[in-house]
Image 1 (cartoon, rainbow, N blue to C red):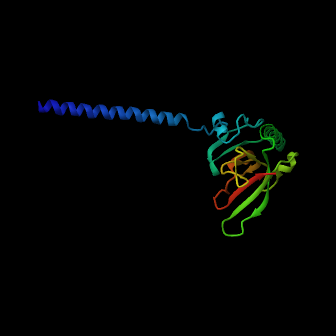
Image 2: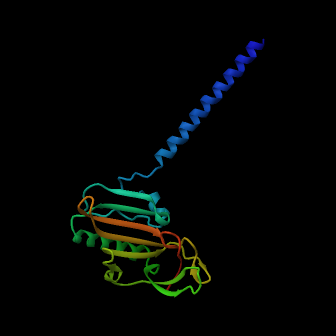
Length: 205
């Protein structure tokens, strides 16, 4: 009788371990399938999280894609070889049109309004929408266009609440490792700088 009870307990333990293993495998499988594919453009679900539903991949590029959804400031990064600057400019125009269509009155270029006077490292900005794409252009550190867009218009003391303002930065940049020009894209929350030492606040003009 005692041996029979021990046998039943052993079977129960074995069954429990087996079931736990199956559940664990199922969880891992679900986690794996939801991971980002770094060799492809972002999914619609990924883009919706940063307020860029319907944003299309750049065109005219060739070669290997490198993309990431774990960039600085809860952001995304993308790069792919770009054959020439004309292709970069063509894509810049496409993205400018996207923001004019989807964020009219809610995107632009930030201008410093005021700086903190103490040791808090805070900066207040006014986002001003520009009509010409050239007004978003800079050549520092490379040829680039930088757009700031507002995905949430809720205010706190006249400025957008945390998590509302994001930056969209595209660059035509030479890569010394691959010895070619790349089209680069960086999408980041604009709440802080990359190391988190400066806090930013925004409003729309």
